[in-house]
Length: 267
Picture 1 (cartoon, rainbow, N blue to C red):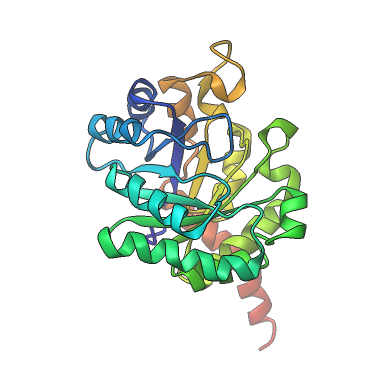
Picture 2 (cartoon, rainbow, N blue to C red):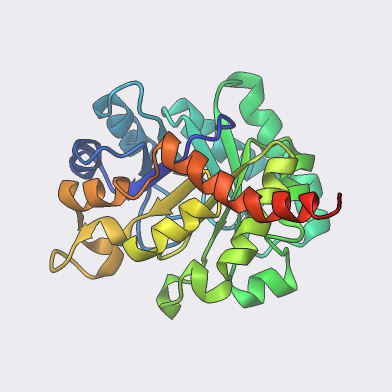
């Protein structure tokens, strides 16, 4: 996940939605239960999706937003790795920074011992009460993820019932700062949290490596919000927002030009 190719991740409940996501061209299939930010699926469901999705497409999942104990979380992370997940998201909600610095590395070591090729991504949350009282995802998250020896860091929203998305908590400038902090530490920068199609271009331009969506990929009228059915057509439209290599290079060049002009004026 450190090759800096930008990817779209779509949350699915099972095989049927996974097939729809693949038909739409998704880059990563994420097995989850959509009632929560990191709703945990059954291991057999993860396995069924992994057996359905073509091999080159990674399958992601999670071990929940909150962890009750270190040994229990280590068992959970090993279980989802065994079930076939290629990417494992590790929720650290309501955990003080000091505890997370002790707790987090154990999760990473557990996966690495048996499944060294798996991708491990801790998850921190943008919700004001969590970011203020526990761990600030942007200011403290990248250092924590680097300390854990994780592969990346995901910033998401925790309370889906509030109706607030990631960009209700952060401006695009904050996201750019988050990306820079992650990349400086060799981490992939992931974002999620009720992200709509119209918000994707700005996030790609900010340099994020992956955007995680669920509701934006669901067909209206097929269920309430995140409980709708994933549509191949909608996934295709979301994937189409990901810039090509040429577009990404042009954007990076445009961002550098003001700094280059300022440098030239000094001589």
